Structures are given as structure tokens and as C-alpha cells.
View 1 (tube, rainbow, N blue to C red):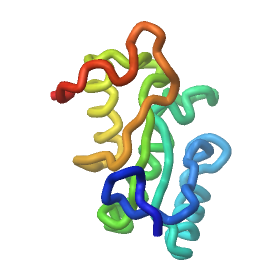
View 2: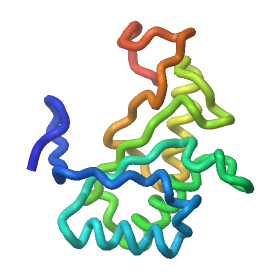
View 3: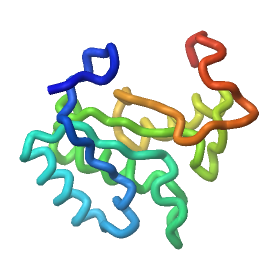
View 4: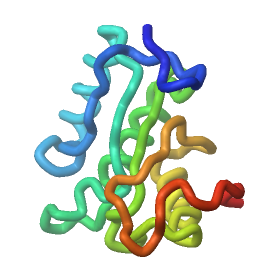
Length: 138
């Protein structure tokens, strides 16, 4: 299986996108998709903190919550590579250091995890250059 960049993250060649979880796929359907994907060897699930804020009655983070609940039920966090994105959640817009820290902590709570395998910008933020300050977010 390929790795992500120069990391040691070994991933299935196909990622499962979680943008429908909590929107057009309810929790039961989402768990079934996650189960089918992992039963076939899949291990990389992509989501974002904003999925699915655009749907009526949702606030954002629904996909992460469903994925987190699924991992807790399956006790499989160490077997799943989670990629999630920052910058578009209604409560955490943009890519400022302060926002990334707050948004990542909220994502970790929703995912029920103490780590995120791959964390990246969903969209550029014109007020915050990418790749500038290399200091730790903590």
C-alpha cells in the first residue's frame, strides 16, 4: 500500500469521502458504508469539520461525529487513517493559529480521538499565508 508523502502512514489506494455522513447518508447508512469500506481493506477516511453544516438542522461536524462513534463502536481507531480539514466550519472559519487550535480540539472531541492522522486546510485563507510560521500550534 502507498504512503502519504514522506510519512509512515500506509493507506489503501482509495480514500472514502465522508461528506455525505449526517446529510444524505444517515448514521445507520454511514456506518454500513464505513464497514463495507474497511471490510474490503480500506483504511483512509476523509472528512472535514464543516461536513455537513450546509444541511438544514446541521451545524457542522456531523460527519466527524458519525465517524468517531463508528470507531468507538468498532474499537478500530488504530486501524483507520483519518484525514480531516479545517477553515470552513461556521464556528471556526479561517486558518489563523488560534482558529486551527480551537477547530482541531473540536474535531478531536467529535472524532473521540486524541490524534488526527492528516490535518489540512480545506480552503485557502487570504488573511493567513500557508507555510509561513513553522512553530508548533501548541
